[in-house]
Length: 423
Image (tube, rainbow, N blue to C red; front, top):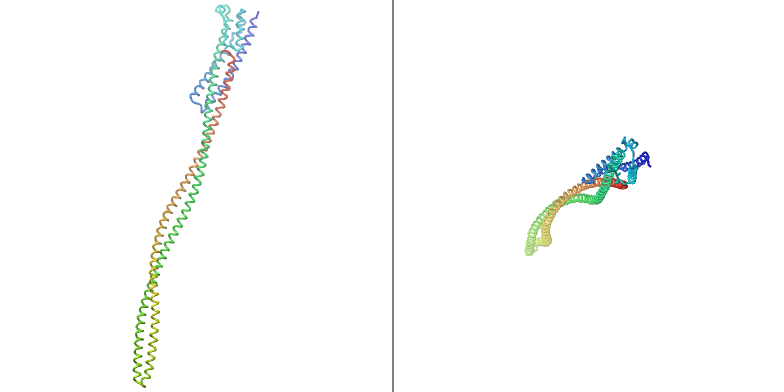
C-alpha cells in the first residue's frame, strides 16, 4: 500500500516538473513581447490596422503570462497543503486517480482531470480539496496555454504580414532607388548637355560681339569710302572744269591763229602788190622789191606756222573734248559708285543692327543656360538627398524585416513548446 508521504512526494515532484515546464514556456514571453513592441515602434511601413492587432495580441499575451504565473504561484505557496497532505487519510483508489492524473499532466495531457464524487468529497475532504486545486491549476494552465497558442499563432501571422509588407516596401524602395539612380543619371546627362550648350552659347555670344565690332569697322569703312568717293567726284569735277577752261582757251587761241593767218595772207598779198609796184618802178624799186620779198617770205612762214598751230590746236581741241567726255563719264561713274557705296552702307548698317540684336540674344541665351546649369546642380543635389533618404528607408525596412523574422521565429518556437501539451 502506498503511503501518504510517498504520494505527496511523487505528486510534488510531478507538479514541480509541470510548473517548471510552464515557467519555461512563460520565460519566452518577455523576449517575444520585446520583439513585438520593437516591431510596433520601429516598423514605419506597417499599417495602423496591423499595429493595432499586434498591440492587442501583445496585451493578451502579457495577461496570459501574468495569469499563468499567478496560478502557478498560488499553487506553490498554498500554506496549508503540507498540513492537509500530512493529515489527510487517503483511500487507495483516490490516490491512484491522482497519480494517473499527475502522470497524464506530466506527459502533456492538460485535458485530464481528477474524477471524484460528492461522497468522496464528504468522506475525504482534504484529498478532494487537493484534487480540486490540482484541477483548477491544470484548467488555468490549459486556458493559459490555449491563449499563448492563439497569441503565438497570431504573432506568427503578424510576422508573416509584416514580412509581406516589408518585402513589398523593400521592392518599392528598390524600385524607387533604381528610379532615383536613373533620374540622377539623366540629370547628369542633361547637366552635361546644358553645360555644353552654355559653353557654345558663350562662344556664339563672343563671336557675335566680334561680328558687331567687325560690322562697326565695316560701317566706318563704308563711311570713309563714301567720303572718298565724294572727294573723287569733286576732283573729277575740278578736272572737268579745268578742261573746259582749256578748251575755251584753245578756241580763243584758234581764233587768234585764224587772225594771224588772215594777217599773213594779207601780208603776202601786200608783199605781192609791193613786188609788182617795185617792178614797175624799175631800178628805184629794187630795194623795195627785196623788202617785199622778205615780207612775202615771212608771211608764208607765218601762214605755215599758223597752219601747224591750227593743227596742234585741233588735236588739243579733240583731246580736250575727249577729256571732257571722259570726265563726264567719270563723274557719272563716281555718282554710280557713291550710290552703290551708300546702298552698301545701308546694308552694312542693317546687318550691324541685326548682328547687335543677335549678340544680345546670344548673351541672353548664355545667361539662361548658366541659370539652367545652376538649376540642374540644385536638382542633382536634391536627387542625391532623395537617394540618401531612400537608402535610410531601405535600411529601416530591412531592420523591421529582421525584427519580423525574429518575431516569427520566436512565435513558432513558442507554438512548438505549447503544442507539446494536449489542451
